[in-house]
Amino acid sequence: MVHAPTLTPSTEESGPQPVRKARLRRRRGEELTKVLFVAPAALAMLALFGYPVVKNLLMSVQDYTLRTFFTGQAPWVGLRNYTTVVKDHLFSQAMVNTALFTIGSIAFQFGIGLALALFFRRRFPLGGVLRSLLLLPWLLPLIVSSATWRSILEQDSGILNRTLMGLGIVNDPVPWLNSPSVALIAVIGVNIWIGIPFNVTLLYSGLAEIPVELYEAGQLDGATGWRGFRYITWPNLRAVASVLLVLGVVYTIKVLDIILGLTGGGPANATQTLATQSYQRSFVDFKFGQGAALSNILIAVSLVFAILYLRTTRRAVDE
Amino acid sequence: MSDSVARRAVYTAIGVLILAMMLFPVYWMVNASLQPSGNTLTAGFLPLDPTFAGYRRALSEQGHNLVTSVIIATGTVVLCLLISAPCAYALSQFRSRWVSIGLLAILVSQMIPGIVIANALYTAYEKIGLLNSIPGLILANCSSGIPFAILILRSFMLSLPASLVEAARVDGAGLVRAFVAIVLPISKNSLITAGLFTFLFSWSDFLFALTLTTKGGVRPVTLGIYQYLGTQVQNWNAVMATAVLSAIPAIVLLIAAQKYIAAGALGGAVK
Image (cartoon, rainbow over all chains, first blue to last red):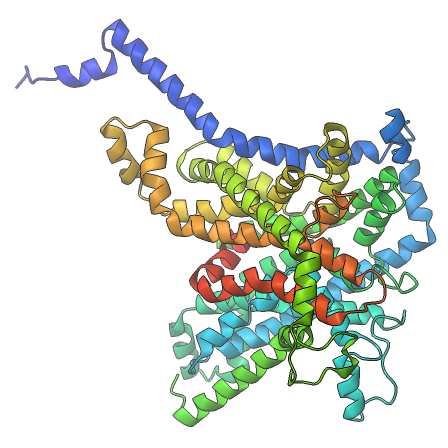
């Protein structure tokens, strides 16, 4: 009993020198391999996200213009780019438009998305197929959607105005994209259409995770219909909903393609947002320093929401 | 749960109606593409007298751009998967405090506007000569592909039992061989999902195409459409035909790869 064979494990722990060295070398090789698994992605993330953020911060305090490309000089100007863009008469309008665009888009995307998700939770023939076909607007290239909506909203010949006039709802064609007072509403409308499918998908999966037993128990207590939604569905959906809302803000606030495709920021700057302004300063006026300053303001705004997002996801994980 | 047959039929009817309303613009795009040349003033609700003049024109004017888009999107898929798959595996299986840092970096990257990336890449590309080049656009498009692919692949690889790879390791296979011979084949479905979405992201890219090209040589089809829209549109049928052609990948994806799509939508957003 005392002489039980304990020899094998002990050699495993502290074998003769050469074996240990070989194992050590192998482990070190292993560590190196592990690093190589991550290195390409880490480099790509640094090049595609790290570098741009740093470069934008630098450019925003430089007089970085088209001339810089020829002379190689971008004089330091401190915060002048920021004061220039903030004092510009378009800045406050762009801020208001960004806020309206984001809030309007998300409120309706979420509201309609929730209604449709609740509807598709009912079981009926073809329900699954219809729900997945609903995703199409979300998968289309944004510029394709923009082009299509341009043709639908066309003032004189677009099908929307022709239908509205045919039905006698309006007497004169509505200048959807040509009038400063309507264009922003039209652009928000198109963005709502694009965002609904994504909201339906996420909310539907959130609804699917609510245990059926809760509803069965609720039925006994008379929690059906609206009361069932209020006391069972909504509390259980809150985690998904808050993640979705904040994610929506972070994505919507930087939307650029749709606006460029539909109105290009016009008419009379009625649809300018921080993102389109930043694009215009950099790539139309070639004032990269000012464009960078604007996009940094954009990042700062969405950073606030990102912090919210991280906190909500953490809470969702904790629960 | 105990809905009657009649009631369910009503639900189906409502569902079809909702879908018809949501997809009307897509129908209109196809309809307008089949109309005779000119503006849409004459277009009825049905293409009763369909003509392919729009497509002929679209193919002759945009065919080259469509090929460019295919090359760029394919290149982006290959590069993204090569870079993302090993990283996703590392983030799912290796135990290290760097894992949470990596995941945080990916989350934060989602809020960086494309215009910030375009700004910086433009100045860098100008110096190293990647403006107006296919590799330049492939690299830029990886900014949407890589974080997404890593998240999708990781969420699948998290479900792999550690014993699977360990068995191979006992047989003397190195980390790389175990990854290539065991992990990748098992992850086939998630690789397909990530690849399809990366293709679609890259195919849909408009911002980088707009900002990182300055002259005609390399022009993805999204930019072609934008330039059609630039001034007063003269030939709606050609514009809409190009739009239909550009929508094909999305439609194919939706019909052929349906089961992957919901997975993609969920994996990319919630994780």
